[in-house]
Image 1 (cartoon, rainbow, N blue to C red):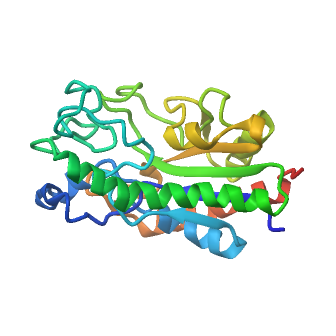
Image 2 (cartoon, rainbow, N blue to C red):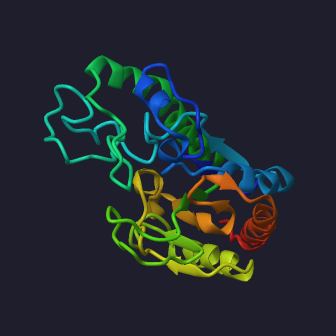
Length: 266
């Protein structure tokens, strides 16, 4: 049996579905404001070299955010929603960026929402459920999952930490609910030993992915990992800095290898 460990990348996709033509009208700096741009490029070399299973999407998170659930919508994003406008401005469909830039000028039809659920949400989450089930069917008592993301280097007015500089890595586990402490400690140690400055559960606690799939009592351990974008990209232009990105990729290789080499499998 392969080690019951895998990585998911839900926010690096940049493809805009035909149901969301308004996104095609946005300048790149707005369109890519909250995308985990290049995270797949940074992690995939080590994923491929180490033989780790990966689940990712090609679709843009503003169209359908896979770290939310389809019910995370309001009247400003979906016509007929029972949730009042403003409840989910950055929910399943993003109405505005974390810098309060308008993304969606008018709410979409319910039928459009449903089609995006089928196109984007259902395949990704079916893959997540299947990989957990496959590892369990092979005899694994526990499955270990990293859900990897990127974050701005400084919190905006829409974050919990406005104006605050951030660590290089933030590890979160839904305040201790989505993974056993030993796995969380291993993840923190892995990134720290790779040379990153690591924070725990601040300013991110974990998202819907770790919340839905992390269930330590059932042997499902999901940890969210945020990577500081200033380490490898120009945050204003959204362009990668190749030399810096190569250094980050090498450190990520060390972190993931450390997890694999020290993971205690039951």
